[in-house]
Image 1 (cartoon, one colour):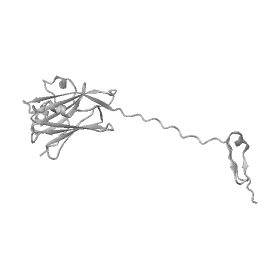
Image 2 (cartoon, helix red, strand yellow):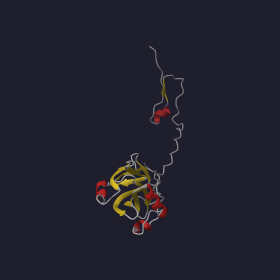
Image 3 (cartoon, rainbow, N blue to C red):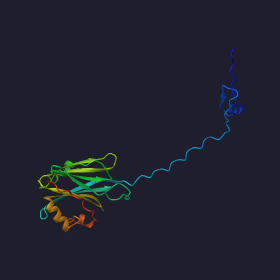
Image 4 (cartoon, rainbow, N blue to C red):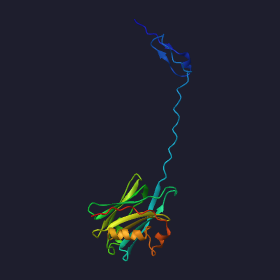
Amino acid sequence: MKRTIIAFSLASLISGGVAYSADPKAPVADPKAAAPAAAPAAAPKVAAASYKVELKSSRWRKHPRKNYERLVLEFARKDNGAAPSPAPSVAPSASGKEATVVVSGVMLDGDVNEGKIAEAYGSKSSFMGALDVLTDGAGNGFSMKVAFKKDGAVADAMWLESPARLVVDVFASVGDRNAIRASAPDATDADEKVEKAAPAAAPATVAKTA
């Protein structure tokens, strides 16, 4: 009968482990040998400041003398105030019947009742139609589609602080928009004290639609 000789390490047995080899000439692992050094722990990543808001109120106003309408969505800040202000952009649709206002880098908490907001101005508005707000679940921002009641209407948008507000203006035409912005680049009016009191972001560029 062939015998297999197994060598045990006494130190290993004493320490509670078993080291063995089917070949008695094979080296036995030394239990006192130092264990491989663990990789250094990675430094924790610091999350970028997130601009977080919740809709507080909305208001709409018609400016017949200047041929445009304004919707203001006012928000309550839910972050620590360190995040930079967003810069909305506006993308007109190919049909020219609506525009999408995109607000990147803002986490929108809570629900937005677009129907209720639009209902407040529906029968009074000549340019601004239905709204559709879409949020990014990852907190990368939100967008709002604004339908136009008038052919040739255009929109632009800006973000104002103290308090946080998204201001969306819909103009009768590109010409009206350019004339108003040339005379009031910050998009404020004497009869809108809240908007006038706050510093204004640069208006978003609007491409001319057919």
